[in-house]
Image 1 (cartoon, rainbow, N blue to C red):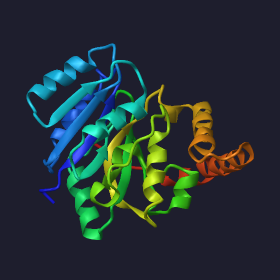
Image 2: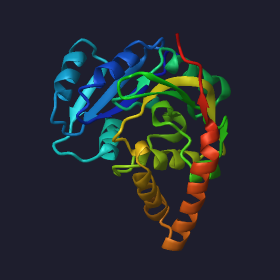
Image 3: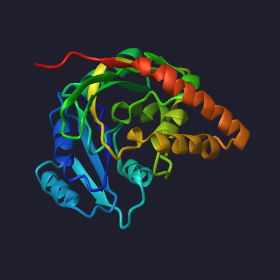
Length: 260
């Protein structure tokens, strides 16, 4: 396992408040054979200056900057082009990994011969305070389940390029992660979740997950544009998506005891 390089793709945009902590959470991993590929999406704050300073003391951190703001999909795919690792992992600039994340997840993948895995994750607010909530996805995830609900937290997904090759990330600003997981899962019968929380997701007021209107709009676009369904089919799928989102997915959000 130690010889398996992990490429960690991190897109950034005006992330000066959080990027140092995200990078530190990777540097503190118990598994150390990794590279970070950062692509900055034309930030206007001090994000690039912070990244450059941190990268000077860690050669495993490589960074690039887009000439114009192009969206998360373009930034992630640009990072993928520069990745050299066997495993492709994802982390957003405002989220965190727990120290044993890579070690446990890679061991799970290799022990069970699974080329695509994910895990549960905890939630924190914008200030970094834990919310005592954990999102616990289905242990076994089929394409059909994923089709109607994105159960894979982007900060937890890892796939094996020895099995899949490099899978292009679509140049969409929103929901390209869900489309990416769907592309992977088309190639295998089932994906499995590591049975514990390995990361911490930051809930932000302006995030896509925080807006119900955006949730409807961007998820409808997945059915209409990615799957190329007509309006009737897309609306039918969207209805099932909404039922799943409102009535089924809440059962996967668990309260956890407050840490003392």
